[in-house]
Amino acid sequence: MSGALTGLPRLESAGLDGWMVRLFSRIDEANLPWLTALTRRCEAAFGDALVDLVPSYTTLLVVFDPLRLSPDEAQRRLQGLIADLVPDDAGADGAIHELPTWYDERVGPDLPRVAEHSGLSVEEVIACHSATEYRVFALGFAPGFAFMGLLDERLEVPRLDTPRQRVPVNSVAIAGRQTAAYPAVTPGGWNLLGRTTARLFDRDREGFSLLAVGDRVRFVPVDRETFEARGGDVTPMEAG
Amino acid sequence: MNRMRSPEGAFGFRVERAGPLALLQDAGRFGVRRLGVTQGGPADLHGWAWANYLAGNPWGSAALEVTFGGLTLVAERDLTFAVAGADLGATLDGAQLPLWQRVRCREGQRLAFASPLNGLRAYLAVAGGFVAEQVLGSVACVVREGLGGFDGRGGKLAEGERLGVGEPAADVATLTTAPYEARLDYRATARLALLPGAQSADFTGTSLYRAFNMAWRVDDRADRMGVRLTGPRLACRIESLISEGIGLGAVQVPPDGQPIALLNDRQTIGGYPRLGALTPLAASRLAQCLPGQEVHLIAASREQALEEHRRFRTVFAG
Image 1 (cartoon, rainbow over the protein chains, first blue to last red):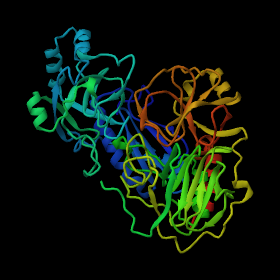
Image 2: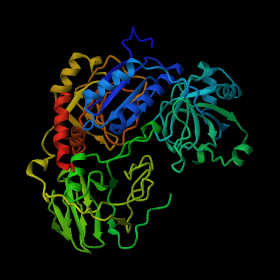
Image 3: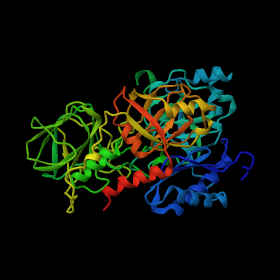
Image 4: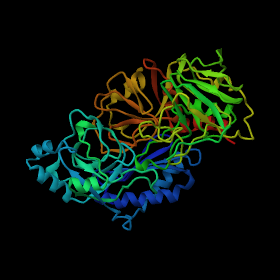
């Protein structure tokens, strides 16, 4: 790992029951196989003492039971894991998902704003957003909410000044260099481009969340007819 | 998922008045944070653990977290239970209910929580524990995520709803009343142990001095996600980070310089710099503070914190 100049990787205290393993200083697809490898090694090395793992763009938060494994011992184990870490290329490809998406102003009210901001036409915004294969960098904010990137630089638009109180479920959205789809109705400040038919979080499904860290995602434009036929909700924003 | 239906006769209480917020909480939901699912569980681990222990339940049993009060339950049969944590002016058939001890009631008796007298959250544990269907390995009720609780969907209690209870454990705790030192006075100024870490070195020296030497006030923006503290403005050399995992008790400082201590229902990842993390028991203590109360942040060592946590958990072991 190339971290000599930044002091990475390093361990930071995250309370009595946690260590933050900081591996990288910037968001990069190339981080994923390292994070995957560390996640798997932690599961093996901590066993029953492992309480939770929270991977994100550049870090892995390791939460353990301090009564089963002292914070000092947990630190030593993590130092050992990091010392000879090799990227897990087996999992580097990630599962591939295609999310059928109806891009339309009625369900993606920020299409004009994004177009104006980027200097592209609405059609070009849609083409640009659906052309990229995104990687899932982290899940958070809400169950099954996947932060994906990196978005084409031309579509980089700031969040809304005032977040919406209720973003409809399955809304496809962008903010900064990231994109996401809302698994549930929540408040949200991202720019809405359309709506997908994918079931993003389903507690009756094995694994619960459709998307996992490291997965590859492509948004596939569909017309309204196809969207409806696949069970998509066409209720416009105003009525929601 | 269908609503849990306890077999006839296994109901413990009927809800006569739901009150503002009463949530079913077991130890919490674990191993699922990589899915973006939060921890849940009791905001005050101390009160929850004592209520379960005194009711004769093993660690991790589901108890009812009653916030603020306003809840009235009617016993559907003879029951053994305990209420610990906050004093919400609870009564049994109109008579003051003794807290921090095992209580027996008869079918038809009315258990009512009024309003906060000391602390904010009371824990009602019934012998055998409340039962509901597990969702992602836990019955912990997280309203925002629509997970857990008696209906499995994070729903609030409804009037007329009947609450299922399990079979009491054969081995009941030897203590039927909590020792004096366990009965915390939540009105006193809280001294909250904080383990420095994360980005603490990125705060200015003045800010670090103020953080640990000046009084903080609990803001009214406080819930199970987090508690905002108001006081001196803390300055950090970094305004935001690439989002990363957030542990229980993490104290994050947004650009306005006013810290937020994150509790059980926090979002799983976040991007504000952090001063460190409250110990689990300090986070519990903060969860019992009412808006306007004064608290102090005390820098603690890992050794001290671990020792304190061990002492606490030893009581409930076995």
